Length: 261
Image 1 (cartoon, rainbow, N blue to C red):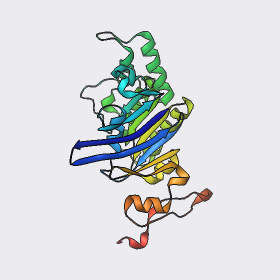
Image 2 (cartoon, rainbow, N blue to C red; image 1 turned 30 degrees about the horizontal axis):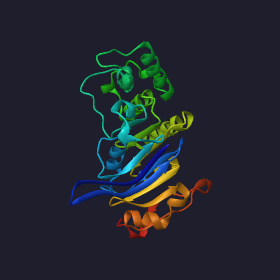
Image 3 (cartoon, rainbow, N blue to C red; image 1 turned 180 degrees about the vertical axis):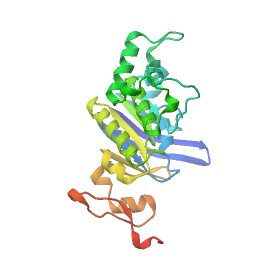
Image 4 (cartoon, helix red, strand yellow; image 1 turned 60 degrees about the vertical axis):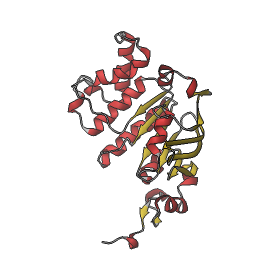
């Protein structure tokens, strides 16, 4: 579904942000980019969506080099959800989701009945039908995230890119948004790359993990293979423990004896 090979990116010759990034993703898989602030997670997503141009390297989507795809062609394959989205106008939820149909609508054309039908279906799939005609500006943070996932789904992509989808969300809404995202990916046989800061959320909702540190991959693979004490300590430069809780599940915590309380 997706291959990233030997990707390098720099903002200037003296500041190399991504170095020799190589990983792949299959249909139906969710891959989380995990790493400290400034490790290159958001930059990597933007390179995959052609918002930034790498210095070198290749990105393949469905056996096609994205350099050979037009903007509209790429938008039919990849949908990108940025960290923040603030609408200055009181568009309804349906209006926002219809924006996902842009790759299929000609310039100066209006959405067709088919476009409206698809947008409404995506809103219902996400489970926010009661919000369809409510102004987007009046929604909570969690509701807005779900609307943006519906918009991404209306784009009918093969790959969803989500940059910190839990940003500014409370405990409950973090799980609600990621649960719905995982459900959508699995039910529609999509693939998704997300960035997260919480390794516990990453271990619950991901199939694959890419550990990024200072622009380099220090670990990639299945969750259970990569989320080890050794890798996590190396990633965050801190002492970490992984006690087992209910159902023999591990939880990732900083070692308490090293904390000042």
